[in-house]
Length: 346
Image (cartoon, rainbow, N blue to C red):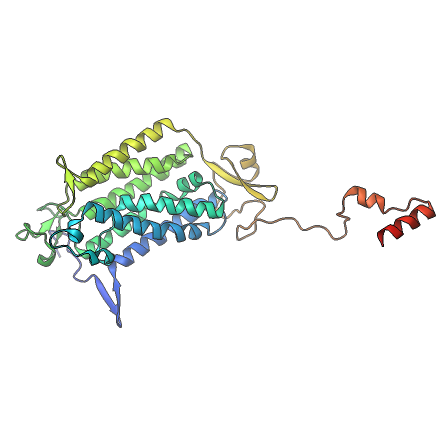
């Protein structure tokens, strides 16, 4: 069949009995799972505890969703507080409306809180988990395709997306195909993830510099993609608010990359505790790190198969008391002195 455009799904909700299964929610959940998988692999390669990423996700995911919703409401308030708005729709996140900048901002706060709970360095963790974030965003954008939302200006090309009449915005009822801006952003995000991964492998980013690179690249893509969108949004001086946000975050991220220096840190076990050291330090080499990462299938020395810290069990055949106590118990050869010692210990 010769397709002259990208068709939109005819259904976005399926029912399991009375329970609605929404494609939008499934896309977000799938993105979260993949991001956690990527983050877990990268954190484990740096000696972090096994499944620590799940403890971080408990904080980051709720914070990220709340931040995303708040940002969307702030940038598109008319649907909720305008003349025909309905404030109760704020709760209907299954109909779309999650702003990525808000998700990143409050999600980072959640990660920070999780790091405090786990006693992990925030910058080290952020650099490790950040490549999974644009991948999650790319997968999440599939939900916009199912919802037939966040498309761009009318377009007559083979890669245009067909939008049903019931989902066309006011003023565009006579057009059938549009720029698939959600697809543009999904592909851009996958490219961002690849660049961050390759750059981090080459330069061993630390001190949050991998995060800054991600923010800069994402902001650049979001700026031009946002310019194609036609959904209602706040704006001024000819630009949408999301475009102004992109300009600000790109400038800040580039400045951070230029001003801040830092190299990758990895965990080693010293004194029965995890300690973060430079990836190219002698301690890291002794722990088995190769090019800043533990070889696949290799655990961190001083931890068990689950990544938990281990401490050597004392040998029951050895006298583990302080040396002076052991010497004090040795017979002195003086019966009276020895007898006095025995009475004193009784």
